[in-house]
Structure formats: C-alpha cells, structure tokens
Image (tube, rainbow, N blue to C red; front, side):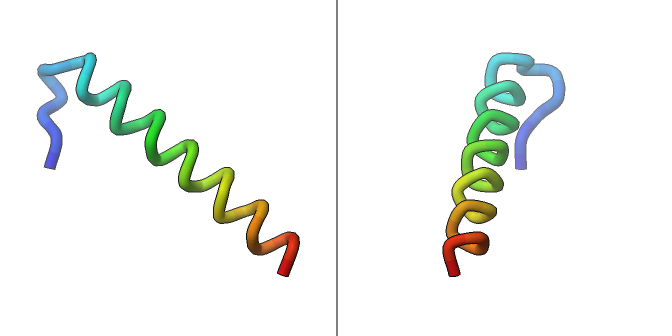
Length: 31
C-alpha cells in the first residue's frame, strides 16, 4: 500500500494506474 503523506509516491502510483487503465482500455477496444 502507499502512504498519502508521500505525495511523490502517490503521484507515481496514480500515474501508473492511469497508464494501466489506458492500456487495458485500448486492448479491450482492439479485442
């Protein structure tokens, strides 16, 4: 789990989730 106190880590975690979501959407649309 991530700690909300470390904004840097939270931002990176959010960005990673965003990237994964976008990639998953593209794959779902393609399939």
